Image (cartoon, rainbow, N blue to C red; front, side, top):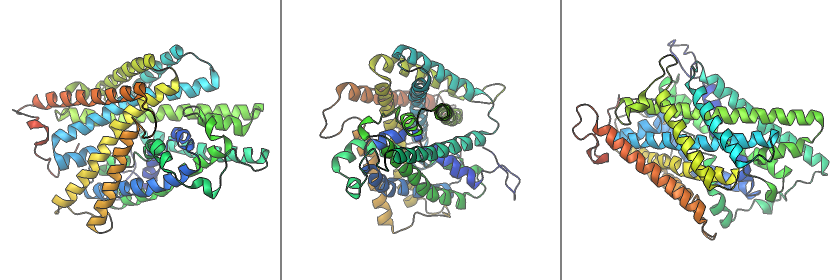
Length: 484
């Protein structure tokens, strides 16, 4: 990402880039459908989770990002708090979950494309399309990306446009139906219930993940002490409002029981905008933009993670294969190819195990989400540790409130994460889905186990390191100036 720092003439990220980057990273228009399945109570729970999870998480990132303006985000902060071993673990979690995640991104992208242009496609054909998309992402990510800010901002603008389009579609439906929405939307319907929380909590929290993304580049920001806190806090309001508007539009257009996890967004546009030739053209255009956003979103995420893993490998915390760079494009080709291989294997395995694209998407999504949640859980703990033990570092911004109250909010956020991990596998009161549950559990165990072996081996081979792993956890903390 690039920009121009007026005072120092050095690269810097503008505040608008930070806001749009956070929208691109957090506002997933594709996850609006599963949240809308919750009904109007989703709005209430979204606000509750924004207060109990999103808001405290953004405040911790604001404090850490302004106190330690170094690239790496969670990796840098957790490594500072707990040492190289935990830094290596975090990088592995990020890389592996994103490598697996692009398989679900490919599934979602191909499903939306087929919904528009190749309906009733077989699972075999779609699986082949998924593999083609995975390797197309790897190829595009390996090309020179001179100004990633443009792609991030463009993706954010398209997402905002799609949210606005859902509102237009909702008003169209209302005008046709005598201003009667597809679902009952009264004050009583917004009342949250216990059962809904258990079932939909993972989808709600997933929508708020990624709030640390732009702080991973705080060393490049013009004024991180001001930009990180303001952007993080503004983003809580912006993203929450965007989700509320999009979900309300979905509930206005389609009955809850008809909303599809994968096809729901495009179904809403088709229902709302009608089937006239002009409107069909508009819907297909929106669909193509949606496919482009999904593809770009997946490609940019995996490229970012692969860059971090390549740098980590240079510190002997991952195998040197991750550090291989493209000779001409200076892109992390080694890490990208490894990610493509992992995504391919996952796609093939779950393709055989799943009976539909939605089941395949949800299984992979659950596995990657659990792995992705772990760094958030650990970073909350690192935040408390650094606050307690590092009293010499200047903190331009601090999480407001008494220490006890701050710790209370952090513990609540951690409990929410633990509940999400549980509910991705099993929801109390619901029968245990053996096939889905075991697939997710085995996937998580295999991924984390492989990471433990890989990081231990890599650190043990570091030059001059007799016992580089040092029991994985007793490694000396990095110095204040050590960054990616």
